[in-house]
Length: 321
Image (cartoon, rainbow, N blue to C red; front, top):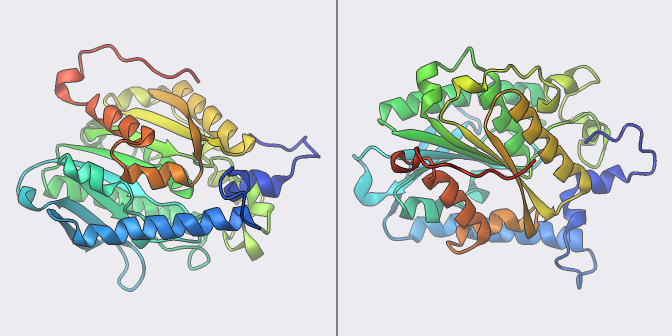
């Protein structure tokens, strides 16, 4: 949603998800408490992977030589030589915070079920501008397809949270660079609590201090997926199902951007669903992906299982947009 005509909207609260939590209301500043809790929880979840029996990790580099173009690939110890499905996770942090040490929340439940999980890192602003980051992300996507072929990956799925969901939209916007054979390997994409129209937020100093994103009124359009000329090529992604997800305790703007983005994908010919998860906010929706029995984990696992060959012929229900 773009609020250009709404003069009374508090845009800082609309674009800072921490202000929309209903947790930590007993704290002097709930918005700060929910952010600190998020960092503490996801950092511990990621660190715990190093001591979890049966999980191994490959530390790889997809670009550069002395920066954060890195990826960790987690897998079951006994499955190193077996072809498997790959799931790629892209962390959030408003393109300026967090890294792969905060990004392993969903790894455990997925690896336990035989998936490989690639947790990517990337250069934060202001080390790069946002347009430069999108270019680097495109290079990562090409690298991950190369990696998938080298490791005989049977299928690839992607999940991105917040700013990571924004970056992940680039996957569907570069048809000339991804061959039809590679597209057929992409099964599911989860866009979780993303932001897809940046025209308002780039002018907010609370989000983009001193314009560390390196944007102006023209370039912001080029980095806003909801303003891209979406080509009606969804049919060329015949195996792909997109799940655009929001949380109940998000701002109206964040939830509405997800709903509209799901519709944009549908209009471009992609199979896309939109779902709002009750009770969750922008942060615990990721924290709880480490829990096998949480609603978000069950949803992710079911969506991944629905792409298995034995279920391909079954009719599927989609959430209304």
